[in-house]
Length: 317
Image 1 (tube, rainbow, N blue to C red):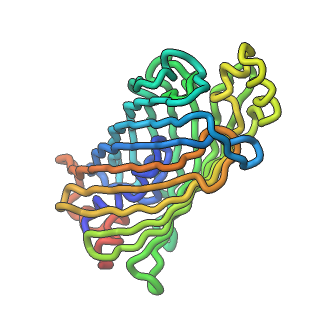
Image 2 (cartoon, rainbow, N blue to C red):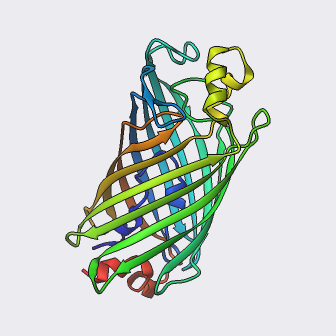
């Protein structure tokens, strides 16, 4: 089983690069991966502040994210991502026209840069990380089909991974916890905590199956009663910035599969949906399909290519 499968375990979960930048395992020095991911997210339900859902039209976001993950040393990795996103809204209650007029619009969205450093390799793999994300340009954020919130953020956290041998030698579990400091908007700073958990199992040397869940808790922003008031008075500043400042909480769940085509090329797919949420848009269906290419630079360490943590799952097959 080539390490390409291990490297794309978490990359195809959602539009945001946080998961990719937070893998517990890091690539060897001088080695890396380039990945292109197609993402398709569909929303037919909006969320109130009490886990209630209501219809206000449908939203579809499609995107292509280009991402690179590179081993600066055997423990330090660098990640960068740049997504192109297109959105369309169909419904009776557009936020702004012509953006919500029923046709696709899009551009480059938020770019991100991250570093992670592996501090412990056994019995657990422990890797702290930092990630910065910023809008690529000043794009429209007041729309159902907005390609982002047009705000910057700084995230720090830690990822922990563990093989489940000797009980399940072909399986592993990986978790991530993080805290994001978000740019202040009209006096509000909706900082957020994120948590992800994933279970993976190698069915064969080429095929891996995954089950995953993620949750978010936001604080410092605006809650439902204020947003409901702002909705009734759409000329208020709060309403025009509600996507940027609301306290969005959710629990998503999904499943995925990864397959190694060759030693250097792998494919990955994940489907996920919102199981519970407050405010924002429910993810009724989120599909991602990724293709990755593993590469080595002239300064890659030949011996490490067969003995790094990234290859542990490979050699246990």
